[in-house]
Length: 260
Ligand code: NAD
Image 1: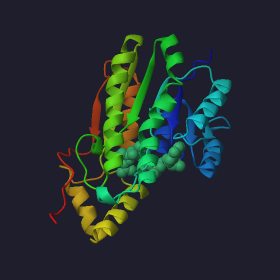
Image 2 (image 1 turned 60 degrees about the vertical axis):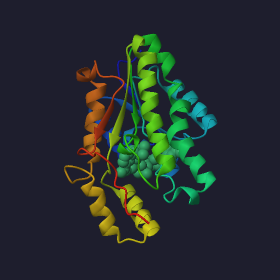
Image 3 (image 1 turned 180 degrees about the vertical axis):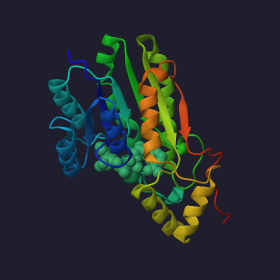
């Protein structure tokens, strides 16, 4: 069997997942990315190699099964899984949320963790070694008005990390959740724009409110998330499991805006 470490990363063709993939490549991992964006998948394969990504909607268990069929034809091991996929979901008052959008958010941000993770367990158990990281959010550590399905999924991903840590620990498989705050990049810009529209408030004011939620008054750098993934996957992380690790500059609560 090849000695090269292999990392599976869901939604790794852009955004935070791509930064994680780059950092893991620098540390000698072969990445295998599952991403729904076919154009980005082509770009990733150009960059990391022909077998480094596959087009896959991880909210569809059939597509995940097909992606792993391909994975196991090309790889003999999996050392690290980063369950990174997650959409922001609908934003708005609970009674206005669309059922289909609610379901799509739970499918993508929570159910996909089950669809993907079950494919890596047999190899990790057989080799008695493995690391799994669920990308949660600081919205998984507190309430966050107007983001109900996202919050439910992100709390769920921490619950799964703690449960899987207990279930898989005897095989030396470590499972943790990462909880970034607002991460610099286009996605948070979109969240701010939608929040501003839903509340009829100036986007710059919303941005300031988000920044003030953090004791350090700053957004999270995607590179800091990638560095934490590498730390947990490496030898220094060997006794860390079942944790929800906040990377949010210390956020006690997500602001409860204004009374009606
Ligand atoms: P993003 O919106 O930039 O998307 C990254 C990738 O996800 C894209 O390549 C997209 O094609 C892919 N993707 C979307 N739906 C998919 C699906 N069903 N199947 C496969 N791929 C899919 O996301 P991001 O900002 O990089 O966030 C990554 C993770 O970090 C998410 O779980 C998110 O909830 C979490 N997070 C993000 C922030 C933030 O501020 N951006 C904060 C906290 C937590």
